[in-house]
Image (cartoon, one colour):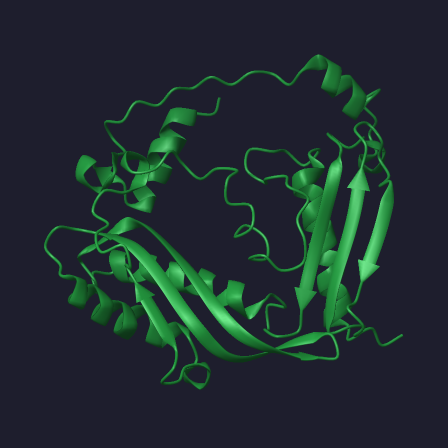
Length: 267
């Protein structure tokens, strides 16, 4: 049997929610476990006669999925998204290793970059704005927050060549962020679908990834078209690529497949 409660508590603990004053106490919070079986109507339409061939399993729902890739980073992801993600990871690192002991678990990042359009490919020129909002304890001043974020989070993550004297830094621009986590917000699951994908680049069909098994094409379909777009760019067939598919519930094959190389295609 799966111990859902302990998985939830362990995850909360690893995030850093270890007491009420940081937003949640992993060991004492209430965990409600209420897991239901999938609707039999959906199951029969998706799984049919329980075929042994994965290729014959029907899509778990209708929808549009998009995969995107660009040659501007080694990850073949938009630089705006890569830097925002790395800043978030660095926030976690310097909180957990004690470099910035005033940090608390909640936080978010955003990076604005000026680009040059090079025949459809996007070439980063400079970082225009860096935005970090992070939860903190009562002991730290806004000046120390800004100084520590620049020194220990931004400097190790953003290459110096992209920063100049005109780069704007918004570091905790609201001025105070002590209350955070579940105490300060109703939650993120399924509500941050853009940062889960490409940070606004490409396109999005609207479906979230969280809590879905591989029959749900919101998740598996989005993964496979990202692989397709990435393979096209990695193979040098295009510098930038968007791949779109759409599905009908219960139908194994996509209804449509669309590829856009933004004019950068080489065949």
